Length: 191
Length: 158
Image 1: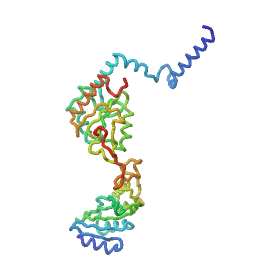
Image 2 (image 1 turned 120 degrees about the horizontal axis):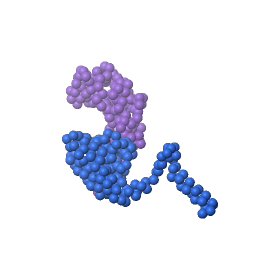
Image 3 (image 1 turned 60 degrees about the horizontal axis):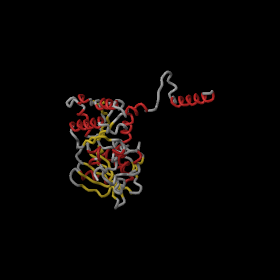
Image 4 (image 1 turned 90 degrees about the horizontal axis):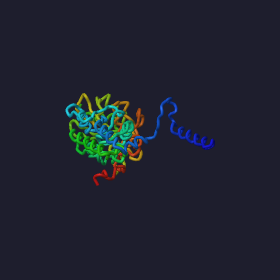
């Protein structure tokens, strides 16, 4: 390899490194990347099964009681049903939560707030539509202020029907979500 | 103070503004009022006839008559009579004076009537939508000719 070729190769290497470190050069001694090549590779291996086993066993849900179904949502998190044994724990901060439970009709005014809660939750995250109102609008489907077809906005994995559903139904909904995560069929992750 | 004496007192004080009165029973009185003088009538009711409590205030849309009616249901702590005042406003430009200077709790009632019917309350301290989102202002969803209802059920049901 003569000098010209070597210098060109170095040049290319430097450019590549520069593009790789772009935006993170203010952290000394730390190499960061904004690519998800590693996680994309892991998704094709058996390691993802172990990851999903861990994820399905710690479904912390966001306490976001939106309507009368929210009362059932709250009681599900209480000690009587003891959902801790399944790893289902209510969290009061969206930054700790894995599951967003839409537990009521979504009005046009509330939708931006719900989207903001959803955006604050870190991935991987899932959505459960809890109750008739969240699924189809319920008795309020024709109202001037109701936003229909929530599943077009959020990637809903599990629908729990009922008006309101019992807490046992919500726990079963979590089981269905666990089955979907274990089978890699959930919509919270792109496989 | 009974229902008839209340009506007589109102008539004698505002002969030009009160019309179409009706004594439905001993405790229910209905009267129509000209919209220009609503604040003076309410102030007279509060100060002289001891109507101290505005129970509710809301609107009714009458598209056939081309009118929007604003209703004031006023009760009292002194006597059992409940008075319903009705003010007819033109439907294309409904404007009425605010009664917040007299009854402070009319503030949110008037904001709600404003966002749902489009009634402009003149001299209201803070006339903005109460619960509707800002972008729905101007649709007036409780008017009879409102077209913004979702015209289909949720797609999972059809």
